[in-house]
Amino acid sequence: MNPLLAAHPHTSNNRAELEASRLCGCCSCLEIFPTEEIVAWTGLDMSNFNNPESASAETALCPRCGSEALIGDRAGFSLNPDFLSRMNQAWFQRTIIRKPAPKKQP
Figure 1 (cartoon, rainbow, N blue to C red):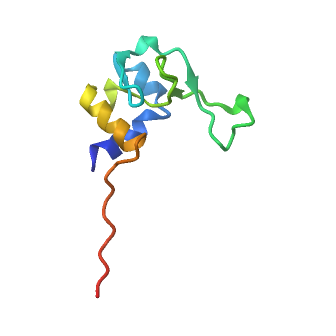
Figure 2: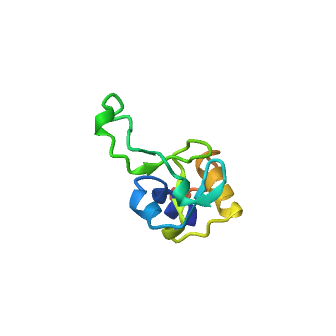
């Protein structure tokens, strides 16, 4: 599997994984920092947007840029500027290479 596709699920509902990590990186602002700097969590999505009490608070917010795009070192991916930049390009710039559609048979 494409590592960018495999890493993406680790950027949401990631509280337990981030709390077990020493470092994390933001796929939006590309900063790498200790997980102790995380001070805010969210869980709202469009299905429960009007009910803040339903927030699960399981997705970390970046303390540098406020994005919901953090990944911890416990996710199993190299937290380095190149990897975070590729994640940014794939998910924020929407340039991820997707599996080609099957060719139509004549």
